Length: 522
Image (cartoon, rainbow, N blue to C red; front, side, top):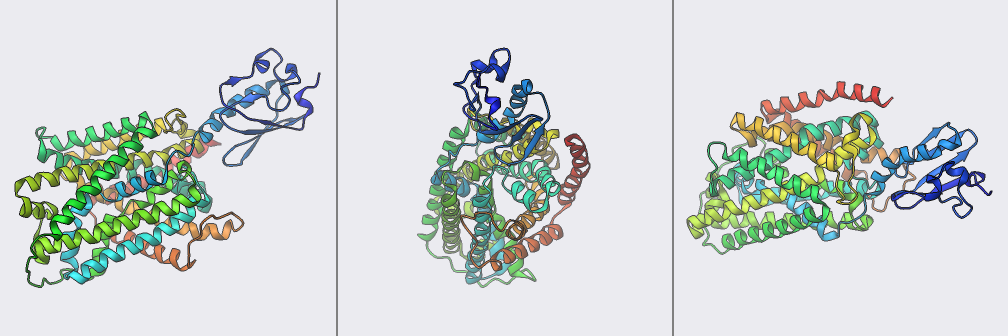
């Protein structure tokens, strides 16, 4: 009998619909007929299996890592079945997102509730209309530089782990693990809780649910959109597109009303900050934050080599244009002094133009913006948890990928549960939004800095890698962006409250977890 064991290499391909009937028979590979030849098993991935007298070498389909199995040939089926779950998770990440989907995701994530609060703070800091417009334009430019850096990383190393993948390749498993730990316990759940608090604040103005109305709305929003993402990428993608369209249309209404208002005269205000440019950039970059989440959909974006760059450039262009026009509308409708004195700048503008119905409209608009950012943050956040579970057996439950819905099911559930716990803790403090900002900011900017630096390291360590897109003016732009991230890290540690200390403590708590995970991995 011409057995496949006579071949030095068997490439096992196909869809995981079970083992072929021949292999299911007693004797396994040794009794397979000649028609089977090298292609014998049918999984949802391609696994290379080198057959030698001493055993089997299995090559992972994504990472390229190999593992030697010195076993009897009759046990080959068991080896392949053992590896199939890893292969299945890797191949299940099919490109399903179009260019428009990526743009809607980024725009929806960036244009959150911050733009309804920060313009007044920026105006109070810089003190003049030209300075206001300049600092918002500068924020867009800085975001564009960062987007170019991320475009190179995302197109060179497309993976659902995003920053985790870049940090792992540049600095090793330990830094990557700490980033995933921080993103799982601090950055992403904190951001989700922050957005959920904004949703709760404005939804309560429309319909109060009692003493803990804000918390109930926040928990309901997290549960709703986590459930939507569990249903599948198609459902969450469709909801994101609709929310992004509604959000942009709502902002355009505010812009049109503001620009069509009678200009308000105002006296020249004075600057209240010792370093107006640096202080204002804190608020501006907070409003521009979120575009970096595009890295986590790189493995699921169609034609990632060209669409990643296009999605980032289009998104930041749209966002910058909206922000500049919105600030012009605020200035024309309220005047610069009115902007500075306002506690709810968009609501004041709309009430001045439309009366109390205008204030209600703003509440609806802010709630839509919070929902849009909430859904996008939930969608991208769980991808890092999935990558962590894929690489560390201690967190293996997080590495499950539902190929039918194209979602990391366990990772989504864990992320939602942690975010709900943070909402409950934040509600006890009665300052949920501010606490979550403090909690996430220092840890976020630390790993943003390291991820930006990973581009410089990977250019040196992996020079032969094909790079579909390269940052122009290298290394000037990456170094410049690293300096900005370093300044923001310093600012977040200097100007935040006790929540920042808690966030740093939770990050450091990942060190003993790392040691335990390494022992389990060994």
